[in-house]
Structures are given as structure tokens and as C-alpha cells.
Length: 413
Image 1 (cartoon, rainbow, N blue to C red):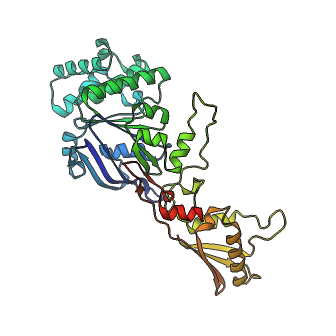
Image 2: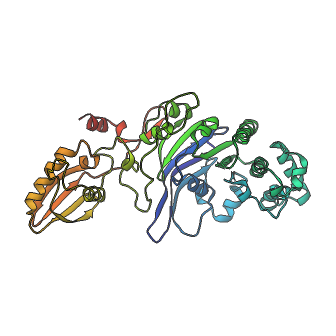
Image 3: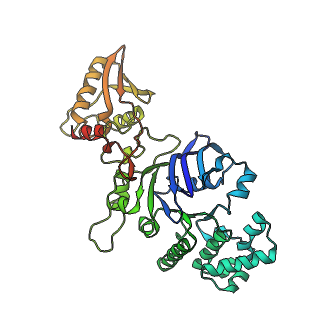
């Protein structure tokens, strides 16, 4: 049985501009003694997923639903006090990003490591301090560190203190949120080796959060690639690294410099989307080099594309002319109002010709299903987008239309 199972987790923030879909239908599991690594760009939802699992929720929560099973028990159903007693620190602990921010600068390290035992188990102070000293020893720190303040320690030592704190109550699973991001390369290697040893000795399950694919490869048994709040690819680390299926995963791996290769890294064009207005269908499609009609183009995408068009080509041939304004009546319908001297029928004909001529070079145009001019306006209907499901054999799954027969046929044609 897996130590942790996350099923259809949704976690949205409430803002003045609308809900932010930070975690949107995320599912994965972690077995005893295994590491699930969450990778992706900053802002893709990795840390929000960790906060949702630990129920570290801010006041502006808009949606928090799904199932989070710890040893088969649904922790979502627990009230706050039951969750604190059964899950936090005891069942699942966390190593936060930036040890100096996680530690209290006014308290000695030993006291901070002992605090979970005192607060959550009611252990006497002397006994808790003895346990804290043992926990510090287990991460390779000498006894005197218990009497030191955080500012007296190096970055690597502070990180080991935070790891000792996370392990002092012997949890079943540890969430590691960028545990080495502020450390030099040698210290990173030492911390990763320490985590491997502790996992082997205690059979710990890890959820390892990072944007560093090279670092993730050192610890990961399985990899989940996140983009814009969703998992776009998940599977055994060896398969995902060797044969990435989703275009975003391919771009991520191509962006990593290789020590023994002259192949130059490839950057990912564009920027991550605004999750108050997430793209339709596949959320990566506005940045994807393989995007086509199934991927999720909407009427607002088409309107933005048409607004940026030059009126003439270098050969002075008119492309699209005579549009006074455009209105996205729905995600799948764009209404264009012609100028006074342009009949709707002529504008519709120009648009049909333009779509036929330019669809091969402009993926957004492949989503256009029909163009009709009537009653003084032109109605452009687009194919309704559906988000692709995770597909693939033997546990290596990716969410991409290119993996479907319909998608392969559309690209081939």
C-alpha cells in the first residue's frame, strides 16, 4: 500500500481578479522508501501542492477538495485538531526552502528540534532534548550544535538542523521543498547523500520539490512534471528522462546544460500563463512548438492574433482588412464587426481565404471551424477544446493530444 495517495486534488486561491487555479486535478502516489519528485518552472504549483497536503492554508482559500490518503486514511476528512495530532509532523513532515527562514533566530537549535515532541506528543523537556540531540547526530551534527543559535551555523549545518527537526517524530513521509536551493554544489551533494542514507535506514517516503532536473535525477524514483497547476507527465524517472513524451518535459530537459556534450541548451519560449485566466485545453499550447487545432485555442487567442497582424505583406497583398472591432462572445465564438465601407460578406471571404492560406504557419488558425458573414457581422466559430487525459503504457503517462490517434492524424494531415 502506498504511504501517500493524492487523488484529484484542487487548491485555488481567491483574489480580486478571480480564483487562481494553483493546483488543478493533481493525482500521484508515493510508496514506502521511494521518492516522488515534483519538477517544473517557478509558479507551476509545486509548493502549493505541498501546502495542500500539509493543510498549510492561507485565509484566501477559494477551493480545497480531493482526497489525500495517508496509509489509506483520508486526511481531508479530519478536522483541524485531528489533522494536527495524526498527520502534521507525526505522519508527514516538511523541510522548507531556505533553512534560515524556517528556523527561529532567537531560539537554540536543540530547542527547535525538540519542539515538535513537546507540542505534539507532550514529551517532557529533558527527554525531548535528548531525542533532539540524537536526531542531530543522525544527520551528522555534533552534540554542541544543540546549544548553538542558527546564525552561528553554516548553510549546510542549518539545513541539517531542519532535516533533523523533520525526522525527530519519525514520520512516514517527508516533503522536501527545494532543500538545497541556497547551498553551494558540494554542500548540495552532501545533503542529497544524507537524504539517501536516511531514506534507506528508515524506509522514508519523500516528495521532493525542485526546479533543478539535474538534482532531481539524483534522488527520484518517479517524476511528476507540473505545468500551470497540472501534472503533464508522470512516470519512472529513468523513462521520463530517457524518453519524455510531453513537449514541455522535452523542453525542460533540453534546457539543462550537459557536462559532456557540445549540444547547446534550448530555452522555452514565452512565459507561464496567468492562472486566473488559464488557457483552454492543454495549458502549455500557447508556448508549444507542436500546437494544432485540438490543443485549446480560444476566441480570445484568435482575437489577439488578428490584432497583431500587419494589414499587408511585404508584397503589399492585403491579408485581413476592414475589421472595426472584435468581441469574444464565448471561448469558441468570435464576432468581428466590419468597418462601414466593408460588407460583412467580403470580410468573411477574406478571413476564410486567410485561414486557408496561413493555417500551416499559424497554429491558432487551425482551430477555426467556420467563418460566416451575415447581418452586418462576421461569426468565427472555433473547435471546442478539451483538456487531454494522461495517456501512456506501463505507468509512464503524459497529457498531450499528440499521444492520441486523433492527434497524430491531425498533425499528419
